[in-house]
Image (cartoon, rainbow, N blue to C red; front, side, top):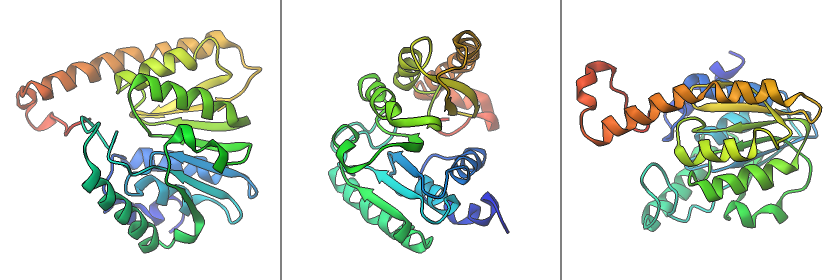
Amino acid sequence: MSGYESIADTVAGIDGWMSPDQGRRLWDAARRCPVDGRIVEIGSFRGKSTVVLASAAADGVDVVAIDPHAGNDRGPQELEGFDREAQTDHEMFLANLAAAGVADRVRHVREFSDRAHGAVADPVDLLYIDGAHRFGPARADLRDWGARVGDGGTLLVHDAFSSVGVTLAILREMTVRGRFRYTGRSRSLAEFRADPGAPRAPHVARVLAQLPWFAKNLLLKVALLAGVGRLLGDRAPDWPY
């Protein structure tokens, strides 16, 4: 098999929030990375998306995974105090990369994203952000790491139009003032292309057009948190979807 299907079963067994269509979008973006290019992932958890990116990247691509595995911003409603789980996450991350045969393809930077800039050279050809979802750090990742994506490069953002903090950060950094244009999404995985010359109005309109879906997600999360998701029956998704 070729393409994403070649590793779909492997990554299906790794903990983490990534639907098959999101995995395919990650795969396609990594395949477009030039042979001497650079892929940077912010937020690796146990390596589900890391395996996809490293498996798809051509030989010679520098694949960098940035995750402190520090027990904070670990997942939905898991902001602090998960030190013991974090060490397990780190060990599982390494084990999953080894089991998938990509351990030698990935350079892990065990550091917070705002402190990891010195470990990565410019330019970045593909940036995948699935880090802290609070507005402040999410905005900093989009602003500071996004500035390092070369023209024509790709920026992928997980939980876009799903998390309040991430969505607000996108609206603040990626609309009128930004140099990226929105190219589409797979559920909550949004894709942007660095294109400084593109007109802003169509881009802004496409971003704003996602807000009704964002509102629907918020209402659904409120229902799940309130315990009334059962009213949806079999159509009720698992948190955070």
